[in-house]
Length: 179
Image 1 (cartoon, rainbow, N blue to C red):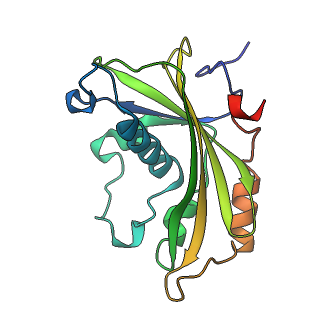
Image 2 (cartoon, rainbow, N blue to C red):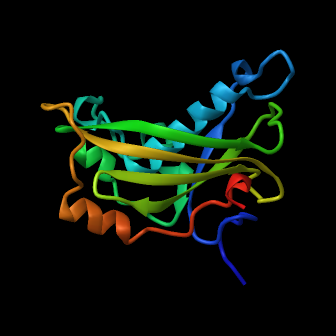
């Protein structure tokens, strides 16, 4: 029997709980696609570290409840550590909207996996679902490129970054477009 959070599409993942805002709804009464991309971004930053950490405000441990919203597989904070010399840029997104997300009080779960580590990029998979795993709303994947801030050119991951990220690589999310 599995302890901890459940997800119908993933077995070992990092979970980030995010609150929806009233303003996240569109005219149809559900969270729109642009807001869903922002949810993926916020979950990625909380799980892997801020890509602007070297310029961010100083964090106080436990401040704003941030520490309590991330659970499951611990992720290396590679993005935050690289932020002084590296831009972490979205190279691509692949998104499948499976069911509308209606506004409600209480969090939505964004479950993440690192599914591929290449010499200059990382692929992150996401499943946006109910915290109890009962319903999947969105399945997505993002490729993040590591770019040297001085040259503006892609840079290879360091050995430490590659090792840290490779240790948490899991099966990719199941996108229908790959069937």
